[in-house]
Image (cartoon, rainbow, N blue to C red):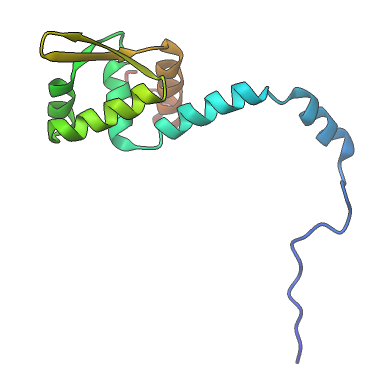
Length: 126
């Protein structure tokens, strides 16, 4: 017996042309979408989430502080911080032998806090 599986492919070119046209006309620019992709990519790692959370209160942390926070080696913390800096999410400054990191744009913290509130409700103080 030959049972054909239903195809999950549309048989028409575009069904809801009005909705598709509306969405096309309201899509953010390619630059905005690229920035969102970078931010969400940065948020896709638990260690980087912790770093951004720690820096989200207009704070500045040294690499060694971040290593302690993450309970990892300084080299590992430095790797995460460098990644966030390369993505232009963090900025840094040197003070003698110490390197301090902070958020370049507070909107990243706003996105993080909003996402956390949505995921856990208002029970977390962010």
